[in-house]
Image (tube, rainbow, N blue to C red):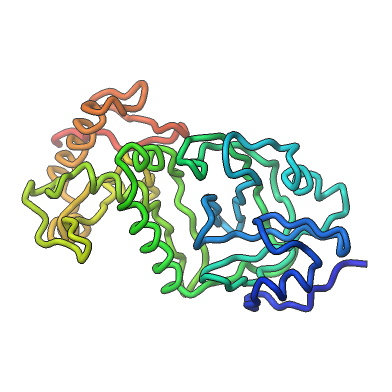
Length: 305
């Protein structure tokens, strides 16, 4: 008989009730219950070190293991990998606010697990396993857009505390394709590490007008805004090879005018920045198409005409 949790999609419960319903332990993001023959997954967007993200209705969920490379045969990674064969039912919760577990529903693997690079809890780059999960039935839960904004602000505030090396590692490991999920509209989840890193490199000056930031934030940092030279709305990539830091005036100018001379200047800034730090993508050349580590095209300096 299929396990019935009695929960509705979007229903919020606390951890003690979650444990009582499924008969699982109170800790961790992957909780196996023998009594209910279930595996409860918790995607914690508030406290977790893992980089889980929704793309086109699929949750790319990071496996188990906080330090070092993850193993596909390790504990609940193996359970999840074999869930289509071992008859273990998998249920998903998401955490958008502390101690609040939002029930998403029953999920299953919709593609084979794959590997990528993510930082561990010691800020060391390591290889993790990603499990593409889709709902067995129904549509993905649509969280409040303001709530997602608060989560992004929380990550950006944390980014301010990182060293430049740690921030660079996170930015370089960022995903070129932004996560998106349905709210009142589709919210593009821009990577906070990319944004924070290009602002750090700008050193308080706008990459377009070369003037100092117009004011400081409440935390005493120069106020600049991250801008993607090739807009995300035009399928641009959310990577440091496509991102600059602008003052609010120049940022608005780029979204209103987006002239070729300004684009060329910003692309030249990016190339100088990559060259000075040894971060240029292999095979990159002036005036030609460049490709990021995923093999996708990034903007090249445009011809004058």
